[in-house]
Amino acid sequence: MNTFCRPLKVLLVVIASLGAIAQAQSPSPIIVQAANSAATATSAKPAPTAADVQSTLDAIKLLEQIKAGNDEVLAKQKASLERLEELRDAADQLKIFAKRG
Image (cartoon, rainbow, N blue to C red; front, side):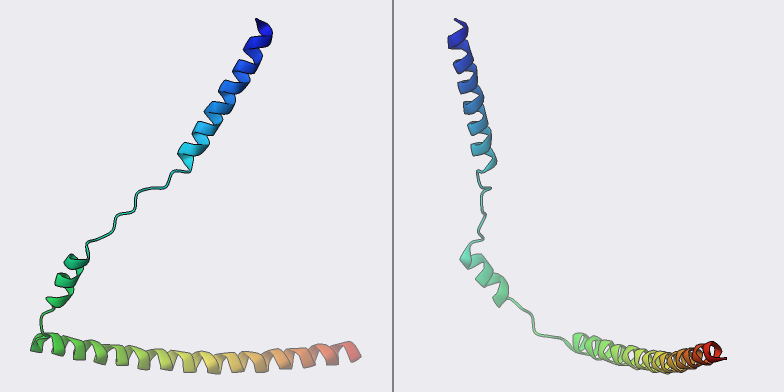
């Protein structure tokens, strides 16, 4: 009886493992939107109104102001970086002269 139970247990473990693997690999369902519902949604765009155009122009002006401010900050940072590089070069020269003397 013992010789029969051991292969039976191994067979049951193999079957359970294969069942778990098969269940883990099953793909999830793919939901596709109907073609004619997308066509009706895109064709119903309203024409831009004067308020929309004005708000777009205001947004563009604001973005240009922000860009100008960013350019100023970048110019200041570039000047600071150049000054720091000059100070680093001067410090390196001082180290060289200190080692000689």
